[in-house]
Length: 418
Ligand code: HSE
Image (cartoon, rainbow, N blue to C red; front, side, top):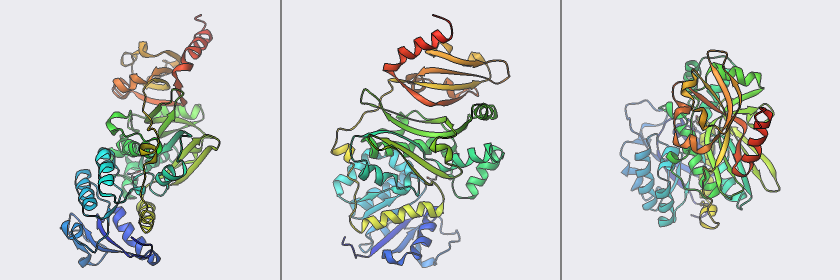
């Protein structure tokens, strides 16, 4: 495709993102990109575009030789995968925002790109308007990436902000997130952390060359967080955020998970409110860098699709450098985490699983402790998300294997045990 060639788009989906893209393209004629046809599921629904643009027959788009780009922004992941596979095999480039599909079909999506040598771009699928994927691919094209900490789900961040700063209750905050077009059609995907872990799965590929099914990454959402947790956060001068993180350990492997975390007020992520997302990258020599922008919503997401379309004009492709050109990193569960756990009754807490407990408060109805757990415990057992128990990571949660003995001795000394 040469730089001046017209992009003729077949668009799948005309929801929040699809309609956003339609409007954005009308305002950017310089891009030389036009939508030829839009495939939708429900022809009865009233649309803000000429009726002749729409069809319900996917083959009208996939088999049209004039259409050289398929933009796929539908909800359901299995049909999305079928559309993407056929489009690539039919020689079309693809732009997709289907994070669930990408996460669940990552090996196949990678295989199809190799097989067909077409572009598959998905900047809109993670952190919407923030160009995180292209930066991980192009700028951090080395093994100096020490860690990434990010807020990757706009709806949960919006709900936490509205609940703890504007004092809305959970249902009101969620309803508002739905009305504003931030939440998934099934909002439990947001609230229970599935959307965040899906995004994290393929961001790990671009960051570290890790290809892991989201089922194998430890995660939780914000559904267990209680008002009492917010009170403790306030006392300790913390915010609560849903944080996706990855950290390269001294053993060369990567610790990665998505969990609620206490964040200090001077942390970059504390600055991220409402539907905004933020990514803090720590790399050798540069130290910390912070990316910030809207992580959900019609135009912010469409802006990332637009940028991918623009990149297609010069045949841009992800090279997956960390996967194919470097030695890919491996995930590990061999480390410890400092956690805050609040609960209704001690009987729900396996105290013996903790390396040590640093703080406990048992005087109120809602009890809590702060202690150190082997990460394996979170991976292998579910007590920490059942029976109304809430687990929130401490600010610097990850403790490496090599540090644990030293710290344990110190904590026992402080407690007067040795
Ligand atoms: N439901 C998603 C979110 C939309 O709230 O982040 C953007 O991916």
